[in-house]
Length: 596
Image (cartoon, rainbow, N blue to C red):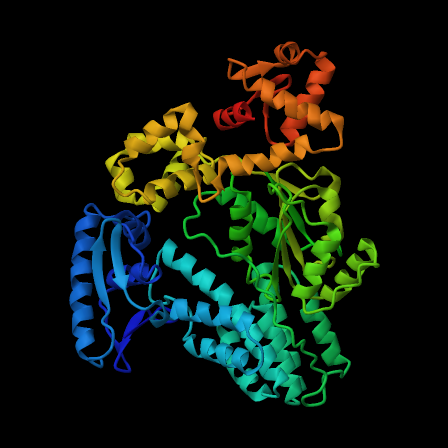
C-alpha cells in the first residue's frame, strides 16, 4: 500500500487508486503521512486540518475521521498481497501514529531519492532522478485546501524544481533531449514562472533543432514574469536567450555544456519544530528576492545572542528560498563561536567552497583575495545560495562573498558585522512566551503541556525564551516521560542546578556561551580580556539593571573605561544595553558568569 500526496491525495493498493473519503479525511491522512512513523498530537492535527476555522468540537470530528481511516486501511489491506506489511493507525502517549514505511509515502520517497542523487554519480544518479520524476503526478495535495496544505505544497514544489533541473541536466548530457522537451513542456504549463525549468526546456528544444519554439518559450515566460511579478527574467535566462538569437545553440545536441559535478544541496535538514519568526522570514525573503540593479549578490547578516536561534532561522529561510536558487545551496559552518577549535580561516573556507563546486582548490601559495576572485568566476551566472553560519567577524567572510545578482548570501554571527557595509542587518531576539511554549509543546508533546500549562510557561521563562534552552529542556523532559513538568520546573528554579539541567549530550547553554567567553579571554586585545573580567564581576551585582556609574564603581574603573568594557560585552552578546548608560544581564548569563 502506498500513500500519494504528490498530486491528488489518495491511497494506492494493488495497483489502483482508492477513494479515501471527503476532503477533511484526506487532510487527516495527509497530516499523519507527512510525519509517518512519528506521533502527531490532537492539537497539531486540528491545526493542520482546520487552521483558523476550527469547528466547535474538533476532537469529536477528528475521532470520527480516525475511526473511518482505520476501517479504510483495514479494507485496503485485504486487496494487497498477504505478505505485504500492513499499514495501521495507532494511538500513543504523544498522539496518533501512521505506521507505514516512509518510503511508501511518495513525499518522503522523492526526498530520499533527491538526497541519494546528490550523493551519487553516473548511472545511479540518473536512475534516482528518473524515479523521482516519475513520482511527480502534479501539484501536491491538489484536492486539499488550507494554510497547512498550502505550506506543504509550496515546499514540495520548491524541491521539485531542483529535482527537475538536475534531471534535465543529466538527461541532456546523455543526449536525451526529446525526453526533456516532452516532460518539461508539461511541467512548465503548471509552473510557468520557474525560470530554471524554462532554461532547460529552451536548451532541449535547441538540441532538437527547434530554435523557433525555444524563442517562443522565452517570449511566453518573459511575458508571464512581467505580468505576474513585475520584472524581467533573471540574467541567466536572458543570456541564454541572447545565445539562441546569436545562433550559438542552433546545432542539434551542440552548445550544451553541463558540469559533471552534481549541484550542491548542502542545507542541513529543516527543523520540523520551527516556530514563529514570521516577520524575520518575510524580511529575509524580501531582501534576497527583490530585483536589484547592482551586480553584487544580495546579502543578509543575522546576528544575536547565544542560543537565540540564528542558525535555525537562516536554515529555515534558506529552505523557503530553494525555488529562487535552484542551481545549488551551499552551507559552511565557520566555527566563529565554537569552543575548543579555532574558526575556519578564509583560505580554509574557500578551499571547501571550491571542492563543493567540483573544482580543484587553488594551491596554498595563492592569496585569499586571488582565490576569492577565482571563486567568483566559478559561480558567475549561477543562481546559488550560500549560507555562512557562525561567522567570527567580517574579515572571515569578506573573501567568501559571491558576485552577481543571481547569487544570494545569508550570514549568521553573534555580533553585528558592521564592516560589511550597507548590507541588511537582522537582529534576532528571543521568542515570545507563547511561541516558546509552542516550541516546548511540539518537542515534549502537546498533551503534557496542556496538562500543566502554568509549569510550561514557567519553564520557558526560566529558559529566557531562548530556543536552544527551550529545546534542551524539552529534550531532557522527553527522555524522562514519567516526569511531570513541575519536576523540571523545580530543577530549573534552583539556580545551582539550572545550567546543569539545560545541558544534554554536550549541547546546551553552557557550551554555547563558552564560545563567546573564550573569544574574549583569548583575544590579543587587552580591552577584550578586561571585558571578560568585567563579565565575571558584573554577575555579583544585586540589581537586574546596572547603571554606568555603578558599573564603574564595581569594576574600580573610570566611567570611560567601564563603558568601553561594557560595550565590548554588548557586542559579544554577553550583556544587553536597555538604554544609554543602562545595562542588564539575563539570568542564564549571570549564572554562567558566576561559574566563570
